[in-house]
Image 1 (cartoon, rainbow, N blue to C red):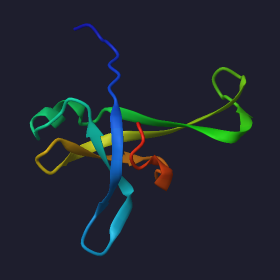
Image 2: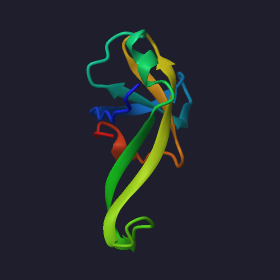
Image 3: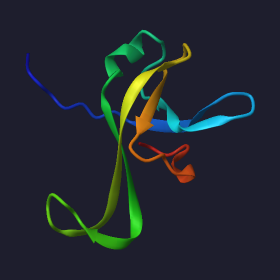
Length: 103
């Protein structure tokens, strides 16, 4: 098997919720080109990253350069419904401005 890196446009749709309560630690994510529950199984266990720009610079731990970019890492846990949505859990909960944004 040859390993390859696949980058797909992913949109954060909101948080998992019931009629009255929402679970902010589980985000609902729409993967581009995925329309059925069977298609989501490929993405189970894959990592996702929410990249955003902050106001202050901070030194990157890997490159040791000053940068304004930040990353919140997460992992796709399971599918949600039958229309191709997946649930993802991030290390820290996604901010509200991430809803509708590309992850």
